[in-house]
Amino acid sequence: MLDLIDIIVAKSIALIEDAKTSADLNDIRVQVLGKNGEYTSVLRGMKDVKPEDKPRMGKLINEGREKIENLIAKREAEFKAVEMALRLKKEAVDVTLDTPQEVGSVHPITSVIQEVVDIFVGLGFTAVEGPEIESDYFNFQLMNIPPDHPARDMQDTFYVSESTLLRTHTSPMQAHTMLSQKPPIRIVVPGKVYRADDDATHSPIFNQIEGLVVDKDISLAHLKGTLDMVAKALFNADTKTRFRPSYFPFTEPSVEVDVSCCMCGGKGCRLCKGTGWLEILGAGVVNPAVLSNCGIDPNEYSGIAFGLGVDRIAMIKYGIPDIRSMYENDVRFLRKYK
Ligand code: FA5
Image (spheres, protein in one colour):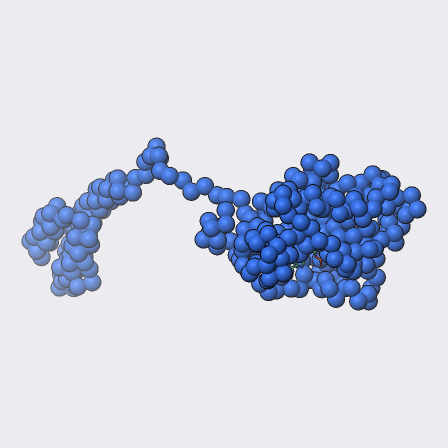
């Protein structure tokens, strides 16, 4: 039995030294020390060893096994070090290489917001922002839309609680501003708004830019002059504007403003559905009831206000057929319309 141990240990050492990979070592481990391995079978012979020889034999068997295991572990460490060095070499990244980098671009919506706000700032307006989660009181009641007013149906939204909602328009910032500062007021308010809408031209989340001017002797003429100038700056110098009568509870009179189609110049095409006009905003003279609600004397002051649909303008300017694609963040879209 002693001879057999010596033979197996010597043979195993030769095999281990000959191994070329850690997979070879694994095979040797199974072949020698595995459940049916050669060395394991020697252990089975222990039952025939005389009791007085068992301690000595057991010690020798353990020493032989340890020798084999240690050598396997040593060679395994060597292989691992070589394999790691090879992997590091293969996966090395040269951080000094001058590879072309993809540069991000401004989203069409952000671009329109920046452009419109810049135009108004150039006219002496100040840009402010307001909360997207709004109270029913500011979103509707101060804007002359009491509970149960039919105009609420035009702006169905998402309620956070009975009295708190995601704002349906940027108009509540009119009230926040009038309650916190005295006229003269000249502000624009870009921001996200929410409605229970969803089709190719109506998104449940979209952007508006509110405008408000309150001062002495402000009239519809100021509104017409300002918006006409802005439309020309935003599209091109030949752009015409058209004011159509409309209805908003917070303005009186109210108008819907169209611009002549920037694609066909007003002749009629696919973009303007043959009409020659594109609607971009709602506006009007601030209803005296709203001024009173916000602590401003309508006998002393008057105002004009407008709410411009940013997404619609982006669709018109960039020729984007479906409003929803602007919120999907598909890089192909972003590359195309940058
Ligand atoms: C309003 O929201 C009024 N607050 C605008 C206003 C402000 C009028 C101040 C008078 C004085 P309206 O619901 O029409 O109005 O929306 C204004 C613009 O937002 C529309 O002209 C349109 O361009 C855009 N819009 C409305 N709903 C959506 C929608 N679901 N998705 C994308 N754009 C929309």
